[in-house]
Length: 244
Image 1 (spheres, rainbow, N blue to C red):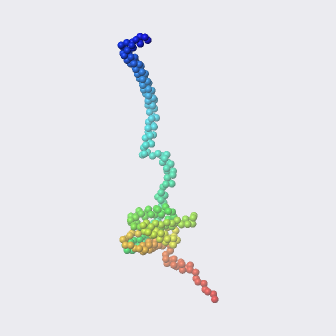
Image 2 (cartoon, rainbow, N blue to C red):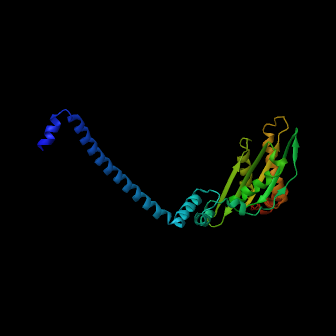
């Protein structure tokens, strides 16, 4: 101990101090290196254990790729969707197209009116008839396609009815009013008008209703004016003679 202190007191104390510090640093560095090597070996062993299970890793990767692949449908989801698809389908495609009749056109001052008639018992059939008519390029090109329908609901003892002007203001309401006056049921009438460039004024409503009335009479949904007059005359009660 005394010798060490005397060495530090002597001229070589700096050399002794450096030697001592280098010795301590060397031991600390050795400890750090040993710790680093130990951590490296632990990580290596863990990675080797993971590599020993290649099948499990590959399966997980494929499952993730399948989830990200939008081209492959999920059949479980598809089954759930098809079970409730009827709630969202447009049932108009399931309806058969009713027979559509086309009446004789009426032309006045270069404007042409033509009626179309079809039996309908559901609102979906109304849509089907309209879609079928619009497949005809001539009808689709008409300036207006006015329509009205009346469907009798036996369970409710009431009528389901509606109309459409298609740009010809008040024409749909007038057409529906005609169906109500004639008391027709389960029928739809469409009147196509091709505008000729000359305003017809109130005459256009007369032509629309005349077209509709004519086709209703032709198809047996309404009686002709002569038949209506004769039936009215038959049901008219004779006047009772006054007694004196």
